[in-house]
Length: 207
Image 1 (cartoon, helix red, strand yellow):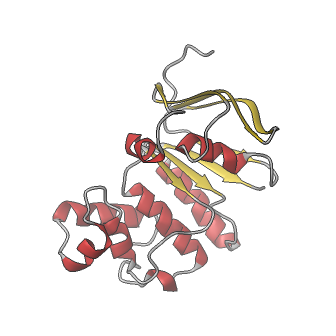
Image 2 (cartoon, one colour):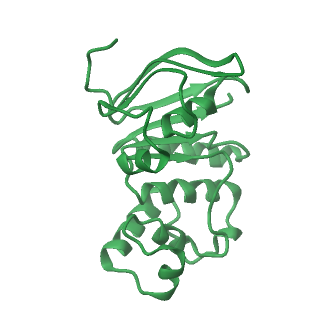
């Protein structure tokens, strides 16, 4: 086992079996602070299962997952999120009837949720955080747009922004460029380079 405790994420000898089939077999993976790690493989290679294991959605059969030297394999999903791990799934999950601003606002960790955000004026610190994140994801000119009217790529960026509002130390993205245009892929690559300056990022891609 590794004695290095400086990694943000340390996955060691990780194994998970489903009805005797080993979806992941003795995997070891380390992610440094502010590292952008891209994991590429075909369907069925266990990429999404790995993210499921890290975020607590699936339990490991064997092995260790440590986040900032804290063992995570027994923690529930909500506690793992609170520790500073954010995950984006393949399909965008946004509030399509709300504006871009409102989507970001309700994602603020000390926010009041969807209905509270609609009923009350948000504080200056929330507004400042929204503007910072909107600029980071390239949607600062679209804050008043209804989220459902955004392009597919913009919806993906918005969901990334919703996760950034929570300021995770490790951000995991499952196929974020799937279905994007060539230009949207280029902009997403630039976005990923920006956001990994302040956190570690794991990206899962098919190719």
